[in-house]
Amino acid sequence: MKKMIQCSLAIFAASAFALAGCQGTMQAYQGSENTEINNEVSNSDKVTLDWYINFSWFNTKWGDNAVSQAITDQTGVNINFISPLGNAEEKLNSLISSGNLPDLITLGWWEPQVNEMIQGDMVYALNQLADEYDPYFYEVTDPQAISWYTQADGNVYGYPCSSVTPDDVDGNDNIGSNQTFLVRKDIYEAIGSPDMTTISGFEAAVKKAADIFPEIDGKPLIPVGAHIFDDTGNVSFDLYLQNFLAVPYEKDGQLYDRDTDPEYIEWLKMFRRLGEQGYLSTDLFIDQRVQMEEKIAEGRYFCMLYQYTDMSAQQKALYAKDPGSIYIAVDGPKNRNGDDHVLPTNTVSGWTITMVSKNCKHPDRAIEFIDYMLSEEGQKTVYLGIEGVTYDVVDGKEVVKPEVQHLLDTDRGQYDALYGADDAYWMFQDNVMQLKWKQETTGPTDQLEKWTYPYATYTGVYDIILPADTEDAYTNARIEKLWSETLQNLLLSRSEEEFDEILDKFIADRNAMGFKQLQEKRYKYVESAKEKLGLE
Image (cartoon, rainbow, N blue to C red; front, side, top):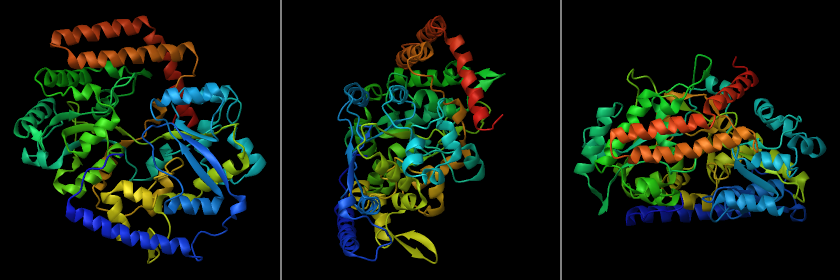
């Protein structure tokens, strides 16, 4: 997302032409007194809120592009974004321990700091702010999301982005997943577009791709790509692979041990064989997101179990350079029955939640700003941008301007700098509401998204976060750390016998830590979640 590859002169010239035209439009927008944004606040009413985003990769600015300017004009709120330069967890922990939390904090809903801030009385209850300053909050929030995030004390301390309910999934056929199996289009087609749903087919395809295309622009091809290894494992080689294999979450009224599912283990053994034969690059085990983005932008991976949303900017850069070099989604690993993949949609938990710190000097303006962002007007602005600048209304339907769409498809960085729409500010995005303005596009990420529609399934009841600072949470963290170390060792094992020994030791060590008892407790959370969502 941060690194953009060089485009050809022809593409660069076209982009420069489009950009020049867009800048002219922006100047007209800035000088116009007839904009769609009404009820603008005076400069004297404007405040600045410091907003911490707990992701080191987030670097979108506020104030220079069309969307952020329009939102500030409408709400009177200017934003100063803060994001960690290094380790996000260390930065957030430092802010918490120092008592210097910024006005707004956005972090993953699963992060332990969420409960830490709530229990430490460091954040406002949003419902109490709404009661005191802006009851419009109750009109623009989803009742199911509010119910989901209501704590034992009856208060709601954070609101999610990208929240999707089971009813949303049932009622829409164009809600997808971000989990995809990606192959580089030109290489995949050159080796005959093979079936990679079986172990033998997958293994043969990887070897053939590496043998025929050993290098990409003078650099070694990386036959298999994946997300990074962290303290909990590697989502590509555990959760995603299990989802593609349709490994069940529960059986016979109890949680299923997905990590030891026999078919899943057979696929891990296949990846081990690839590694033994030199087809798993060492980069796979050491690269962080920045290095991976650079290599995706260079088209160096043949195939990846990957979130397509995490590589959309690189996909667009590849498309601008050579449309044949982009990644396409195809059916990936399947179980022996050939069952459909079970790919999670977003859930009622969403992706991140945003909280208001008790250090906030303007809590009234903070809740009003949040309510605007959650409103239909706010969502339309965040998603579509500004009428006359990023889109026109044609026959009663919003249509993104062709030059704006072109820039979005070819240079996300410039698009964000100039326009800032298409959920550049995703912290309160409502994906379901935004479906009403969804554009019919044929851009380089369009196929990736649509491929997931038939496989998208609501699995949110299995997203279990144990209460922080409890023995259960501690046990779970130890088991996850053990799995992370084990998974790498399994893939790097020198023989199948060694693989089996490592796996057996993991199971024994995990059981000694209290795994079975923890599974029983975790299932109680699943039952509670089903009850809360009316799924029983």
